[in-house]
Image (tube, rainbow, N blue to C red):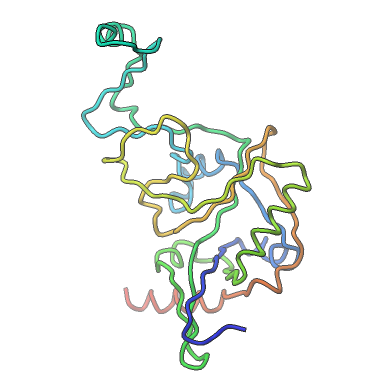
Amino acid sequence: MFDFDTTYGCFIKAISPQYAGNFYNKGEIYFSTIGYYQELEEKDSNIGDSKENIFMSLPKGYMCFLPEKELNNLEDIQHLIESGQKIPIENALGAFKTHKDVVHCLCLSSFRIEENGRQKRFGLDPAFVVKYSGSRFFIIVEYEPYLKKIMAALQRLGYDKIYCSPVEYFNKDTEFIHTTGNPFKKRDKYQYQNEYRILVKKDTLGPLTVNIGSLSDIAIDITTLMENSIKALNKQS
């Protein structure tokens, strides 16, 4: 039971209609590879991101040198310039491509029920609803049990390298260097997703599917509500 005029945190999941039944009825949770999202941008730039798992972002005008050995004093700087690996400015943004590590992506949101239940408000960027038009939408109102069920299912399968976090969005023209891949950093063009990720690091290739049981007690199908929102947004534009 939810109290009126109270804001609650939640997840919103947009999912292709053909998978929606298994998601809601069986709790079929799909993890796509990072490589899949990297390659998807060629077909769908709204969702796919060729810079998934970003490892380097340099401000314009900088050159980076990677020394072959550790620098111990100022005299070593000349050796660094002469022998260090130079990174061209045009390659100043890159990503580690992997088809092993997988992610399950959710929209981190909130909801509020007002006016004795007659009006519902979601903390959601309208661009999210528009860009995922044609999907089935589910609000996961009990997000902590949802996460716990996924963690338990992964651990039963023997996975122990599991990481959860909101995604941090950055401006590719001003952000400084990241020396290692970071699947929790994305370009700010995707900020409308307000994404929360569950990352599983594994040794085998390909996506991953786990089943956590019916979501009927923790999730609600809000597709009709989202479709009506899309219609309203289209009328305004």
